[in-house]
Image (cartoon, rainbow, N blue to C red):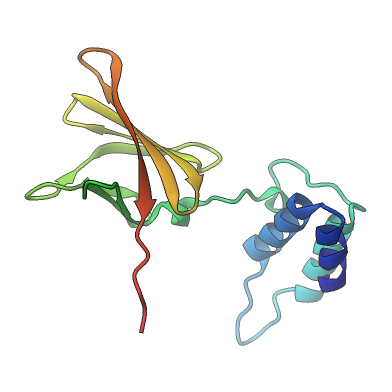
Length: 160
């Protein structure tokens, strides 16, 4: 698998390699009691990396770069405005005193866009650029127009 990955990366096929590794990561769940079918999964990944098998849409081998966990964390813009996304139910809070919980958070099927409401006046749409940057669009529901669009960044806290 490593050799096939190197060959494909050097052959300018990084998307194929990344997709296979994401698919393997999505399916590999070892425990102290078993190897979780690692040899079989590694063989499948290698075949996909080499292009011998396809990435069928809707299967674990067609895993995208984003998932629910991508959203969890503290996102902030350059002015100090922040949004925190937490939990498996995607609880969304925005800065304020006290912080305000947002309403009706929902994710797109590809996990790239998170949408939620605020007091019936605003619809917020967050769209990932990558795992650490997004574009935040504020839509004024009263005026039916975009009020503001700005970049936000995920804060990464130092660990000990």
